[in-house]
Image (cartoon, rainbow, N blue to C red; front, top):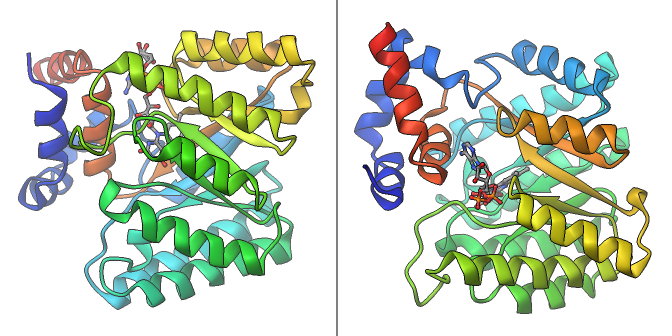
Length: 306
Ligand SMILES: Cc1cc2nc3c(=O)[nH]c(=O)nc-3n(C[C@H](O)[C@H](O)[C@H](O)COP(=O)(O)OP(=O)(O)OC[C@H]3O[C@@H](n4cnc5c(N)ncnc54)[C@H](O)[C@@H]3O)c2cc1C
């Protein structure tokens, strides 16, 4: 069986990315994890989610852009998303990646681009979540987020922390003091053991510790996981501490554990689904395979079926 780290390594191979995205044949497979190639595909899906009492977060797929004009195109796309959310009245916010806005070219460029999107969201009463990427950009992502947070309100911009990182509990302690709205997830990249816990049990234990810290802070945070153990730990904690259902939200990814998404929404919890769309699906798709290498068999079966 192909390993998690091999799949994550493949997710970073530019040559394969170009090869895969060119063929319609591969595109068909992505519907397992991606809403489609166009914004209208994502909007249609979000309308369905809203009818099931789930909210959403748009993700326009692209990361590590290689030029300023490419970053500019991403800003334009996000401004368009925010406009379409207003027009269509769907219940959704947006998630951005700083490398999509030029972080790899120039930190100031990424900051200025993110700022334009947060400003537009603020004016519309919407919200921007800054996704967290690999550990080479953790500090700069937090630094740029703090700058944005000093200029914008708690309900305008938020950030993501990853429980597999050894530093995360300390980051959470610092960020809750701002205060800041945080999405806690386990983390989806390949990290060395000096930086991230290699054992799942430690990642999970840290997740529970950070979740408890966040939910005790009284700020509205996102508990992002499909892991029933993490969800049960959250439910036990909020019940024990008398924290109301309206004080936080569960978050899950498009296409993963639809049963659990619907069940939590039916039980009256706030549930937000991350809805990726766009042509640059390759790295995102490969990370989803890496989370559950058994998914590779699902993909292979579909390839063989034609
Ligand atoms: C809303 C949201 C936003 C995210 N944002 C970020 C981010 O900004 N940065 C980042 O690094 N990571 C992000 N992630 C990904 C996250 O870090 C994990 O990689 C991912 O959620 C899998 O972890 P898990 O908590 O579901 O637990 P796991 O222990 O990985 O999985 C628990 C169970 O969930 C199901 N499951 C999980 N993943 C899959 C899959 N791919 N296919 C099928 N079933 C699956 C399986 O049943 C599995 O047994 C995000 C996740 C969510 C839900």
